[in-house]
Amino acid sequence: MNASEPLIAGPHQGLAYTELLARLSRAAAVQRYLEVGVAQGEVFGRIACRHAVGVDPEFTLKTNVAANKAKVSLFQVMSDTFFEHLNLRRDIGGRIDLAFLDGMHLFEFLLRDFMNTEAICRRDSIIAMHDCLPLAEPMVERDPMRAEERSLGTPHQGWWTGDVWKVVAILTKYRPDLDVMLVDAAPTGLVIVTGLDPASPVLKRRYPAIVEEFSAIPNDRAGIGRMYAEHRITPAEEALRRLSGRSYTHGRAGVLKRLLG
Ligand SMILES: C[S@@+](CC[C@H](N)C(=O)[O-])C[C@H]1O[C@@H](n2cnc3c(N)ncnc32)[C@H](O)[C@@H]1O
Image (cartoon, rainbow, N blue to C red; front, side, top):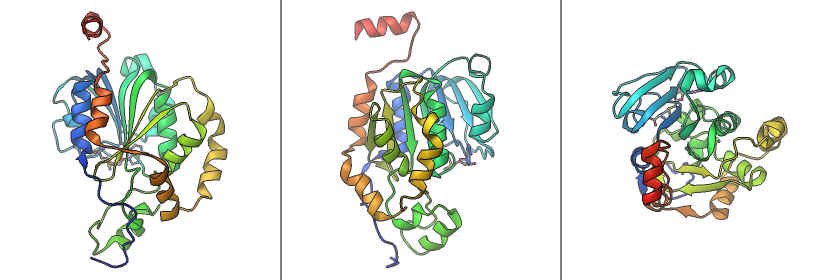
């Protein structure tokens, strides 16, 4: 091991994030799914739902992304462009039940993806964010090339989470109304947010000031260590159990399912 890899946390011991999301989509009977940052479609292909929506400026699909779905819509644009031009009814048919945000790994991008996604969710929807629980310092570099250089010869060679961990601190400070769960999904964690408020103006109104404030906060192990110290880490299986009671089947079948428990 390269001695110059300062570790921040031990490896996350829970289910792989791919497995957790795939199981969640079935357990919560998700109807409409959004993934920002699809790449090869490893997660997307495993999601079960009625309609899945993918956004990526450069799809590199290697899986059958239509598996387990009735309908798939792919938008080959940056997420900002997608949200800017989105007509909810016309383009994707309605609000999102489950979203997975895994696009650009810089905190100001993920913050925008979060606030834009929340606005097209319902109060009982789920937003999962990837890579917010980094393990070692090199992977949090904002520049992916620098992360690559610093991780050479370490057990995490080539890993890049960027500084999206800051979004946890931002939501904790500015959106205490949200339920933010840090989950030990391997390899770099999932942050799962519920108790959404699609009409909340807080993040949009304060976005420039928040970005300025959090750009000045060092992207280092002290800050990340504080995040770990201030939050409980929820085991992946427990997270799955807590979220599985939901059902997004809103038709007659869904009403029956809810009535019958
Ligand atoms: C880590 S990969 C996604 C992996 C995928 N979610 C999975 O787990 O199978 C990140 C993807 O984000 C995409 N990306 C980068 N910038 C983006 C942006 N501004 N909007 C949407 N996607 C973006 C990249 O093209 C890349 O395919």
